[in-house]
Image (cartoon, rainbow, N blue to C red; front, side):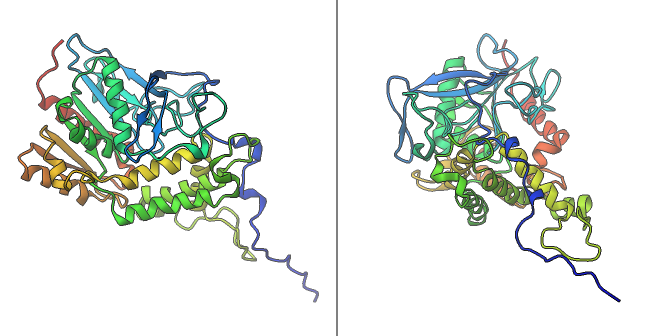
Length: 409
């Protein structure tokens, strides 16, 4: 009997692991040549530099933002929503030209919803260093010669909040009825309470902490290394490359790593188990995939189409730099500046920002006499539970807003 020879097994990744280059842009950043969609824009620091906490400076900044509802006559019904790392100002509304995704909190913002736009004026701004309309590494320098790229300085959460405060001034908002946000939005919420205690009436930090822990830094720094080890990152100056020749592989890998921390073992097991994409019958090959691998690849490529690799580096670094006590005499000294009702929200299955951190925040505020409550979202979805289990999130928001005095009209 003659046995046909088996084809050689190779460790080299096969072609199906990458979408066709033409489908992946050099950057997923929004550009001024794109339709604005629902974005509005504010320029600031036009005639003087904006000095950053870490020592850098920028000039002539643009902050992109969206609003829903109407500000009342006395400016008392405004709510600030702070987005997570790969979020943007489009917290509610449809996808369309210039806006690739639907609103990331669309179920919570609108008439009759938890953030009822018949009652409240809701604002969400793309953070400084982002890539969806606000000034970031993909933006042109003020002289219009080229994108910032590697020349863009490191920004902190405090820098982001300072731009939001200037936006509030321009919108006529002297005091937010509440400031709410999860994940990277959570540090922004807490910094609002510490930096501008007289400009907030309540706070709702979600899935966050008072200072980034060693494990959180480990997760995010691993993703950053995945980006900079992509040869197509080119030291951060890749914006003039051809479509498909940008650092999408590194950015996708960073997203795949973070996606693992956003979900739970139960979710992965229930959804994918050990199902395979390429059959294992007959012979094992290095790049035969399990379904969970294809799921992670999908999310990596999806992010590469709507985000910028340099912004991912900057914003994840800002999360690692988050420390309420830095330069303020410690955490408790910083928290002593927060005096308003605070609802700290955790997700029961969150492995990235475990619920004990939000409970600890509540306890520390309570010891200082603050009206602080802890609410835990029961979810199997992990860190992203506050984006997915919106019915429980709606109850928490309604609870805090209804506990305040009715906004004057």
